[in-house]
Image (cartoon, rainbow, N blue to C red; front, top):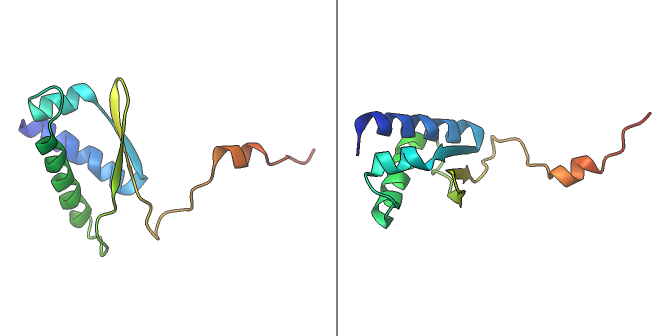
Length: 101
């Protein structure tokens, strides 16, 4: 693993801790792992980094689960919400709200 890329990955995971979702380009992940495709051990290392980042943020709760969405150009990570997060709202629900005229 390359140190600069680890720092970039940790930065992305800090965004994930604050913003619920983040996308990381596959090129950066492959550079970090030194392989294409990622192997099971790389996902385990990513989980370890996520746990470290969550605890460094002084979170009093266990690190929430992170779900992966494999896109063609990037991997999107979405964490479970916590009690501190605003509630999720479905786009279709907002689209159905009529605006008074």
